Image 1 (cartoon, rainbow, N blue to C red):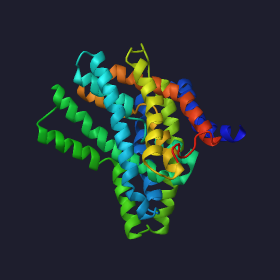
Image 2: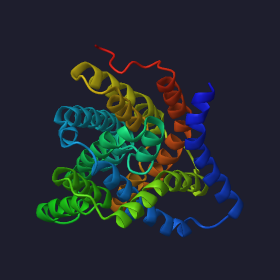
Image 3: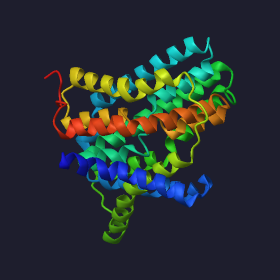
Length: 320
């Protein structure tokens, strides 16, 4: 039990510290801007580059792992979208945001922090692969379906160009591409630069988890939408369970890769879902509620998952 607490306490302890600090200091959420900028544009890209640049190239081309992961996540999106379509009486725009709330986890912010702290640096490779390809999926789905709903902004060419910009210019994806290139060509930065990258990478996890706690403290939940009755269990239970069963049944992967994918699938709804909802002016307040409620509930569900992994209660391959 002590080993499990040693694993869980640093992860959720940082979130609690951020939460308490925000409540005591009573600073506005807008002041988080520079910390978020540091995490997204500097610390996490440095972490991705540091770990990927030293990774054997063959591990970066695991297309079967990527394919199964994307298929499961798209399946979860489709499930939530269809339920949302029935519940909203045919609103494609609302159902799109609901689908994202059920399938788009906090894989960029919390993912690297939790997976690498819990499973070690070996988890960095599947984290980076999942992040890149799932973001491509979500960045493409949202504008395409919003265009179908009539809320799309611009022509089909403009929408496609916007999707490509979102994908190619995301700092995590840029760092991943550079890291993979460095691994392929076996290029290492000069020692002083490598030390700087290492310092920045070390700051990624604590800063991201602290910022998550601050965000939780400063968000307000005026009411709980009825749709969260199915979105929360789909995101926190169905998604990781489906990911585990699919990776076990259809592949023969390293247990760390399987557990990393399951852990990322178990993460709460990504903040980007609220950003997308605001961008299209649809379901934004309820998207914010989904982020807050799934994050609060994930303290229990992810802790249980970490406990089960640490105790060996989940085999690396359920269908050996």
